[in-house]
Length: 444
Image (cartoon, rainbow, N blue to C red; front, top):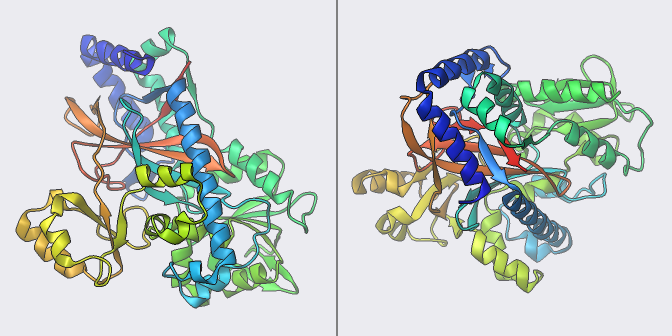
């Protein structure tokens, strides 16, 4: 039994021996979370009871995965910039391609990223689920749920016996952002910073915490709807009339392209290099779910090392457009348990995410006929890794297997923490539905 397994058994032993005490603690945690920033407009980020604890060996493996992945993605972005033939592999419009080819205002390729994994703790094997870049969210979940653990008797018993170290995701991003800004050729001493998004889509609690951290570090910072920015006399201004020197972009590129005519002021400021923005639009090369198809393409293989090619082959699931010319409808229908269908460029589980094994033969036939040729990808279904957990607050208070999906946060290529999402006895994690988030610790 390794160290992280020993810690889990300590949680389980305490819960089973003090069931009523832990049930009361879970209900106190529920009250705390319901009154926390994680509860917005009737939508609450829920948690299962036992946190996720990894040992140092596993965390070191995550750091290696993060570095290798970042290096590969950097090569893909550079190839896109340099090669017109390589650009043809991506399904981007002319307008988006023009934005992607704008020079980034910082030294780096991916300011912020979260890579979601199907990770098997028993073997260290893994496959990628998907990649998020600028819209990467949910940092506040780990922080707020971790705070609520003061009411968790099992956790209090464990930390008396083991040294558990949490991860920090807010000040680390502020530090990274300011360092990136420091490489901008038009930098000023004390930049005014704006966090921008289409606010109806925003995870505002995250934004507000980041704003507080920027302000705590001595910087003026405000949250703005991306459509409200005004570009005049060579400068970009917020609705409050403040000149914006630096932007933390949380608006995903797909939303920007859907509202292209409503964000012309921001786009013009970026085109004219009148504002620093992290991240630049080139991050969409990595954010698109089409990336996995490109990673397996022979043109990509031509510039990756042998080690990187082996990494892609082992860890990037087969992906193709769910359309004529890429894969037949018949193949996906006949091998339903081998495939999952996803929208080409959605996020937060928007659109139809469908794993064949969740459907009967007739249901799968109807669904696939409806989605074929409609901007979906067909992707290899990856086997889930499960660990036990218990949910007194929103579940039945019994032990169940939960699928595990750690999402590795990287800031300018450096690993900084994990979003741990789970779901009870499921094939897919649906945001704000069956999803349960666990705070993450490293045991030392």
